[in-house]
Image (cartoon, rainbow, N blue to C red; front, side):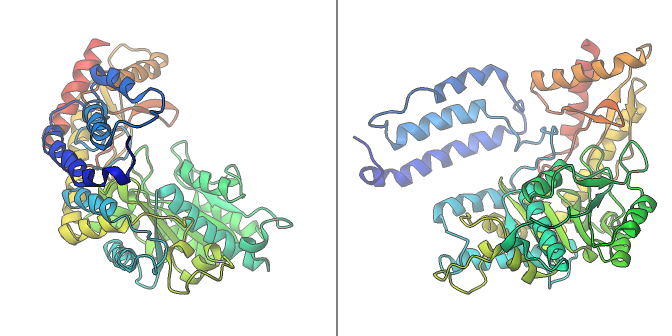
Length: 469
């Protein structure tokens, strides 16, 4: 018969099993397929009825390692380009193990002064890295979607107060729909946040000047001028198809002229601020009312990690801290500043990676990935049967296969088949998107392990599969 108490002596031995598996697994990431489909049958070993008595700590961990190290998708490896997904730096990965080891309840300062202090320091360092004013409030979240939820919830509370309402306490009943304006780059995570906040995912007025989604500033100004109430503007720093940016400074000017709230979704593009070469792309972000980004993208810390910054920290408390629960202490508690109450100490990997590599380490990381994206774009540009569909301002390369003699109406299907072939092959990962009405590939380069050799290998595999179609 097994239960945790009877197997407490196995705790260290189980961790040793994981540590022993780490070296060969991590050492193979540079060469193994992103997804080895021949190992998919191992997933069947996860199935079966719930055991009555259990198989014991060691047996369970051994089986999970046997399946996981063979059948997992190597999203943490250097050749995963399908979504904007980073890996975990050595410092962040080790600190994530520390997070599980210590298992802190990080929502309240009382339950973990360690987690609370680490979160404050990590947020201060991130504001420094991004060039944001030190006075901004901040909170760590599980993802960019939760970060957008945080920033837009503060915008909703701010908007409600201008109507004389406390929407956190009383809800939206009796109020008009909150006006939300954006360019065509607005991401589904912002729409999802608006959906959860009761504003509606389709309640966004999109002001786009072309089919790429570039913001139409004149149209947005006309919309703002016609409104008789304050509005919320959503700007994007780093659009997922091409890595392009809304002109944040121009949006900040509009927000200032019309008394609007400016929310900037910088899921991965905010990291341009870490680079002296690229920080012009986010000029004006320090004037936004709320700013969000993902840590498990370009910061390269383990899932789940996002962060939200808000100009007015008191507004964060008014949006999330009105508990009315007298047993909660009055210290600054991060569960009063964001949507979570039960939170793991996700600050520890962020603290560790920033301590380990510093400002210059992340500047080099961002600039190296930009150089790699330009390397791939140059290969595309030189290939007579490939077409670069957009400039490469950051780390995403948007292009399509266009062999001579192929009819225009056949190109979308051809590129869909090429994207499917890449995923089925598994050696590298890059899927398709729709950009300006056509099917395209859009590899994103944000993993700290990725080098020129990985980009060249991606190109080699792509050429091989394209020639087979």
